[in-house]
Image (cartoon, rainbow, N blue to C red; front, side, top):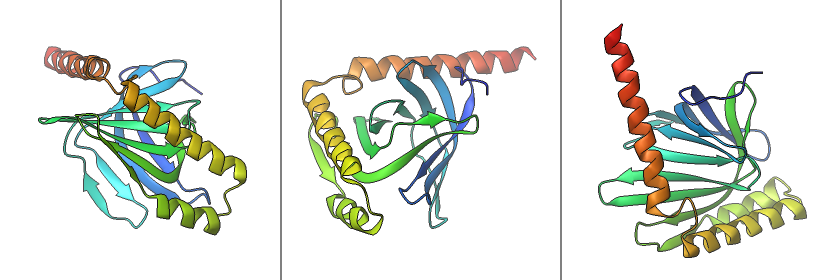
Length: 185
């Protein structure tokens, strides 16, 4: 299986603990691959929900899919600042087909000023019982939520403007290079 490389286009697939599809992003542009993370951009990308609803993302989002951490971070680039939507999820894998993870319901929404909201605790509790999350899974999810909150408070990567802005600039450079390559043809 070929590894992901900068400039590749890839699907992103999120599942639930029972193996059912949660959400699929139809296209993400790989802008970095490190030993710890896949960094991709979705920009006006079709998203398909489990109930088959479809919607188009409205702005560029720098997405950090961690290989060992129990969360992922979507940094939405808007005129009013960078908003972060963090999903508690299994570590992400690339299987030659898509970047994949299991969504565990809990979310953290972070605003440009650093304020944050904890979301979906009731959904997490419901699915813990319905899908029989093990004690280990529950503990990992709650630890990941606490780790995220600490990172937000300490403005650790990716929760600082300079870090995310570097990736935004890298994305625009890739687009510019791609456009120039097309014009040369």
